[in-house]
Image (cartoon, rainbow, N blue to C red; front, top):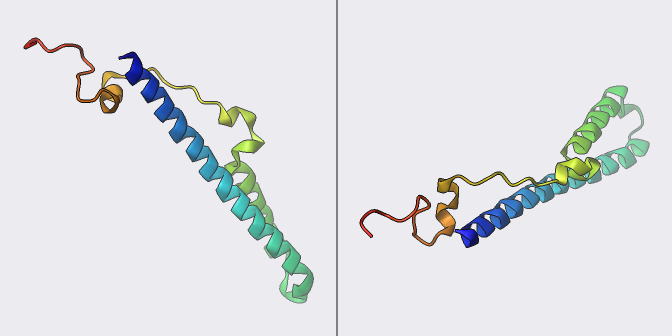
Length: 103
C-alpha cells in the first residue's frame, strides 16, 4: 500500500506540474504573438487603432492570468489523501480495500 501511495503522489505531482507547464507555454506563446503584433504596429500606420491596442492589452492580461510563474502559490502542489479507487491503478491488480474474504 505504501508503494501505491508513493506512486499515486508522484503521478499526481507529475500531472500537476505538466498542466502548469502547459499553461506557461500557452502564456509564452501568447506573449510572443503580442510582441510581434506590437512591433508590427509601428508599420501599420492608420490601420492601427485604439481598439487594436485595447485588444492586445486584454491578450496581455490573459497571458498573465495563464502564467503560473506570475503567482508563486499556483505552483504549490498539495496532494489530496487518496481514496481507495485512486490507488487502484498503482496496486498491480490487488484490492485497495484490503484482502478478500476468499483468501
